[in-house]
Length: 176
Image (cartoon, rainbow, N blue to C red; front, side, top):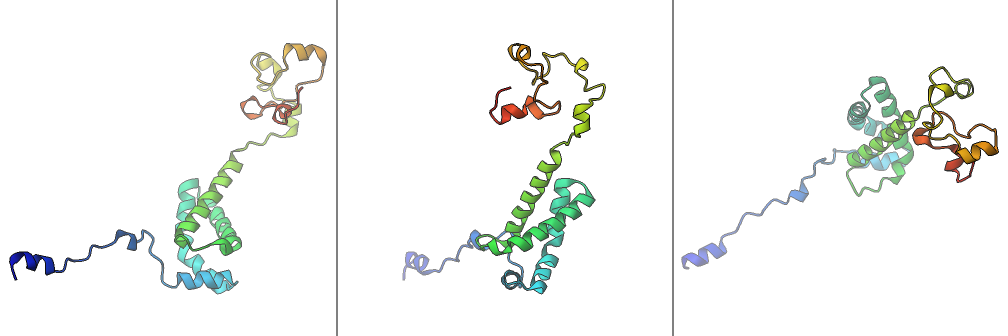
């Protein structure tokens, strides 16, 4: 056999497939615990909790920056997991699915938390800073147009603290 034949017959080492090694490899016994927890096994759900509680808590703490809120959101995440575990299809790693579930839950919490509540007493009896004399009528985004101001003496349908000058009547498509 010549030199070229030896090169052709030599076995080349197989290349490792990077797709075989996941970033989040499956945890031993996790698949069985998921299947059992889907069927209502409390012990299996407890195992899932112990496997993932630290990861969920650190994610909540990183997003919220508050220990108390992170603990509350961790509890909410596992309650949500308990309710939605049946919808886990296994197309991704369980840890990835749980991560996404937690992120969505924390984002919803932050959206709700971002809404400022204004007491009705404050809108009826505004403080000195909120009084109509503090700002000019032209500066208030919800002040009625001059043509509508002469038609009615009713106050503007807007509340003083609506974001971006949105009036309740304008949001519903009604005219003042």
